[in-house]
Image (tube, rainbow, N blue to C red; front, side, top):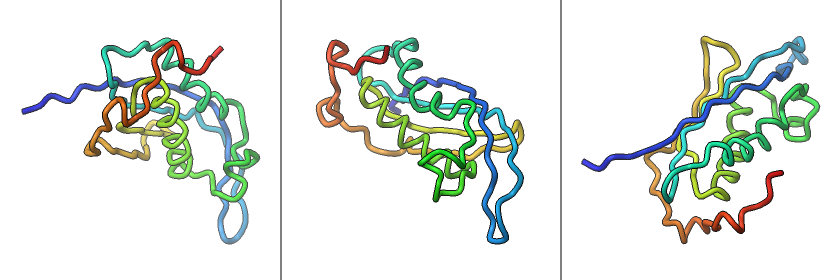
Length: 142
């Protein structure tokens, strides 16, 4: 049996949206979105401070926003499913720049329902294949 080790990072963001239906757009309403990311690190330990700063790029861009007005959701309905897809793509790219990959993301728009994307069965690339950059070459997150 081979152990698989991962980290979880939980974030929250307040944002509003309105669902588009065939008959029109629903009522604008607010959510406190909970985003739980499970990640695999290629080498050693993760710096939660550095990863948190990097994740804030994707998650923070939604903070206080009316999602329907964002370019990413002008033509894509801002449902919990589509917000999860968007965040998965954004966060996985950010993590790859920080020597990690996203294994699973869970996005909740209420305490009772979540949408998840799980890729824990995927084959991990080697650090070289993932084009891992040494910390000194990582993008400046300031």
